Image (tube, rainbow, N blue to C red; front, side, top):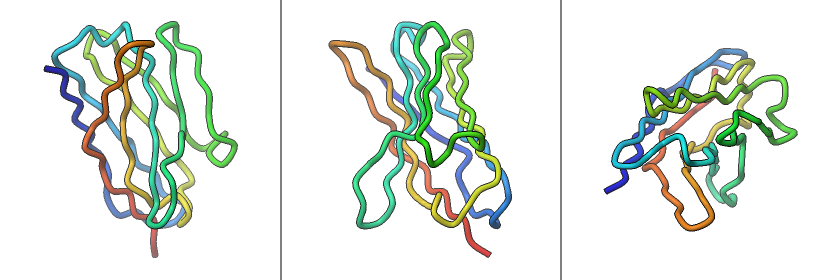
Length: 115
């Protein structure tokens, strides 16, 4: 059974940083594209960043230059380093593992950016 566990969320002031982690179990982590998504209240879930099996990355325009996605296949863990956080980054952040035939989600971790 595949499990994804996100951690690292919390309350941070504008301009601050957080690092989210997504630990996977029950599958061969290296075979999956990893995505970080977020969903703010009243809004649709949106893709924030993704990293392919080969390490190529893509980011939403709203986070380019501030967020960095990475993965450690040996630890079966993905990360999202978030710097220069803004109030509009407030959301529940979800980790996703995907292939053409499988799609798994974590339970989400709350990130709140507020003074």
